[in-house]
Length: 191
Image 1 (cartoon, helix red, strand yellow):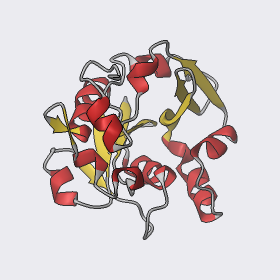
Image 2 (spheres, helix red, strand yellow):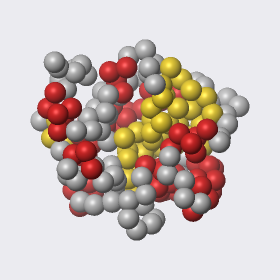
Image 3 (tube, one colour):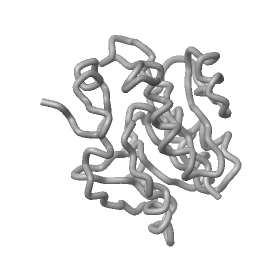
């Protein structure tokens, strides 16, 4: 049994401060694409958001917010999701990756033996696409309290595995207005 957490709580500085998860892509909000990709692969779905909570609640899934005031980055959203999760393994994905693979969870889960965390890679590590044990929440809370904000630095301190995916476009982040309008619905970047 696996909990899934969609990270939609960021500042979206590269999107001019707009709430990225609610921006339209191919006729629906970015977060809806993430929901459609992840919901069939997990047993529970949670959205981690820090603003526009009514809009996110309308998707019909559990909603959590960072425990701390201000935007502390994805680690804070991961922690909120881990604390709310009811299952031992917790998947996290960002809301701006609309093309995630349909076998993401099964591929990550196959690599869990002997580790506490499995991170996706496709040409490079995609640190926020991670399957980790819920029991790492205390460790993560301590790291945040000590000022850690870098996901990969925290992950490097854990017993982890990295799973390589061949299709780099499946992990494309739509971080800027240009990327949002330049991406095609099939996962390929247009010229």
